[in-house]
Amino acid sequence: MSNQASARISASSCAEWSWLSDSNSSVASQSIEWSRYSDVENRIIEEAFRARLPIATLDDVYIDFENDIQVSNNDINDQKPIQRQIRRRTDTHLREERFAMNPIPAKNPFSGLQDKLPSNESRIVPMLVDRASQGIIEEGKLAGKTREAEWIEKNMEVLRSSLHNGNKEHENVWRSKLRTFGPFCILLWDDPYNHLPLTGGKMLYRGANLSDDLIAQYVQLVRSSDQRGSFQAFTSSSRNRAKAEQFGNVLFVLRVNYAYTTDLSQLSEYPDEEEELIHPGVCFTIDGVRYDPVKNKHEIYLTLTHNVDDDRANPVTRLYNGFCRAASAILLPVMDGLNAARPGPSAGGDHRTSRMTNGGFYRDRSGALREDPTGTLADDCYRRAQQAPRYDLD
Image 1 (cartoon, rainbow, N blue to C red):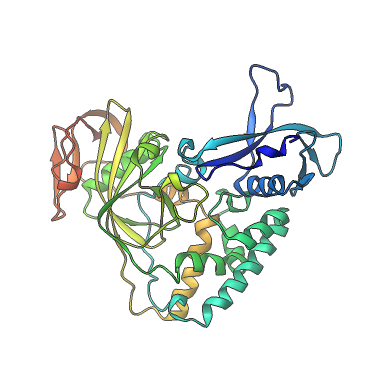
Image 2: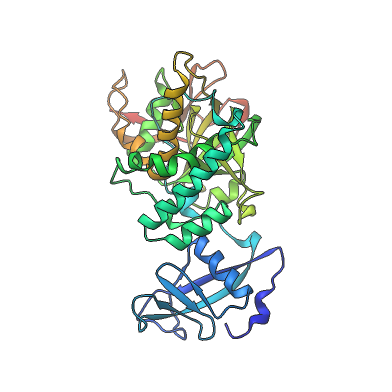
């Protein structure tokens, strides 16, 4: 950018860098497609820009500020225009890949891991931090993202990076990452500085895109005798319902009874997302499934509570399970749990959805199943008078 004076921006604003991804378009074109850089790339570029450096070097390209272009590190003739926009932080939407990509599993096995963790061992935490830094650098090199990894290792902030994008088609990949990603994940999971659970009926929200079959699984689980599940990965949610409703055809409404979460809004580059990170191992009950005809969106109500460890499990087993589950939080999509969910047939038949009529189901505080023919849930926390469909199962 030739005008470096614009580098100063207010605390209420943020700079967003993007590049012209459509090679057939020009900057003057009416229909152009700009692609945003990853969060880490954006920070690397912005830091170089504010330092008035001539270029910012990324893993695959470098940014030429004087000519407003990105240039391939492998081909100097591969150039694309770039732009810098100043946005108010309150104008930013939730990051879809973080808040809506992976739905909450309808059914997953419980796994215990709560006590005897590193947060209680002051001598272990520094060792884990060192190992976490080493692991991030090593994984960055393997992914061809050394510069991003070095920035993450240096800053350790809550940002979106290509290093965090797992591949759901390779279920066994995360197991090979225990040595490198494990220490970082266990620190994130067992936060040494945050031991206070979220309580008091606080509400969290998460959007998702679910098929009719998956929605029907939730309905079936509400009607079954075992409507429990657990989070098998770190799961982002928002305390802002309106923002969570931006994504998908389903809104998960999460009532927190007692659960360990991490408030990321004070650490995040995107504080207005009001992000609350739900930890692996937090359990939930499925309380109800409703449909909002005005918003054309299903609402799935969950109550979150924390799991209790099996006292028979020894600390070594718990720690190993923690590394496995924490590593899977980054590399093993939650979708696998949904695909594997196969609730057994009940008196109502199988799980095929034949038609939807007004009505719904919910569980009261005693756990008893109630039918809701008018679409009004009686649970005190979910009183909202509106019509909802019921799935009639063949």
